[in-house]
Image 1 (cartoon, rainbow, N blue to C red):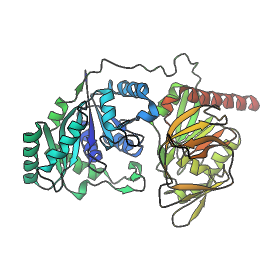
Image 2: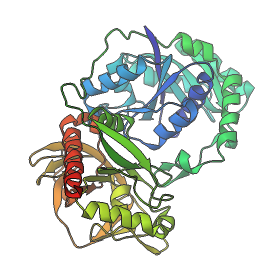
Image 3: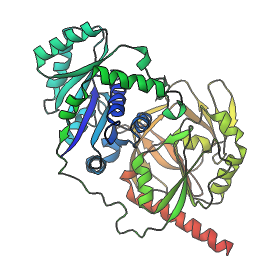
Image 4: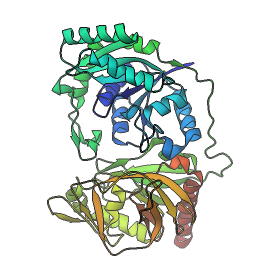
Length: 460
């Protein structure tokens, strides 16, 4: 047996992220907490790591599939004292108009209890009707109780608790008062990334004080027991001749969108991952034979990235030499000719691709996508089909270079090209979870070994 629970919300903005972070942080003072996030979100997962000290794992049914999702959960949950899963959007909001992939769906797949976060501002008896709807919509979801958010006063909470206990007979674990001090800063893709918030510690200290004062943590622990006997074993790297090779990956304030399990996949396939900062370092790490540049916010740091000419040259020289490289979204933007911000300022980038990246005021692509591979690249082979997601405000302008993906929304006919190839570099707006693509990671690492051996031969 082990402990795990999901914190879901009635809707986006109900307060599930604030409550999740607060409970994770308070429990981390006494226990090893393993955080999880439903869906593809990178930013919330980074906040989880900040408050627990442990990397968060994304439980995304579309990207992973049910078997991989279970494997990932149990692999990490069995090594923790308690696992806390933060839900996504409203509890039943899934793909398109279905519950598929929703917080409720994941809770049922993993058979774990749910605590529902309710925005109770300006509510009285109606709170019972609201919660009843969530309880009755799918009776197989184990809603064990609620936490009320944005409560007006102690008297208001007493009224709400009386209604819920009388009408529904479920546990009310406590509440958080309505207080601007608990609000987390946001911008165009959600929360401002934790890596850009060095002054945020005081906000979390306040949140922890509120959690300990207003929420019954012991009652929450008592309902979090689950059966972990049905564990799933993953065979990453088994039977593979592990050849140590160094791969540099960009990690700083500008680039930090990575799935923990994707990085682990590289390591289990024989790679030693070496972090570097495109903002602060002047060249790529020594002795690397591959390059991975994840997503992030290069547009926010475009001026600083542009001023670091030595790093831009180091990246361009490495890729032009044939070094295997993979770049997603923000990483792709970094490899284009330039980034133009919303004020019209243009900053030159690495120039691997003959595109200009231009920021816009609205989302250009948002949500899950499917990509058919039409040309071989460093990860995939022609005919492969992959699942990913896009979430960006930028567009590319300029000469269309060789594309290896045809991308479309699931079930939709409208399609576009992406997955651009330059020598051994693949750059794309499509984010994928490499935990699902064992052969692709193996292929990339093998190419890195070939590159290293070829360079060593030439030097001899």
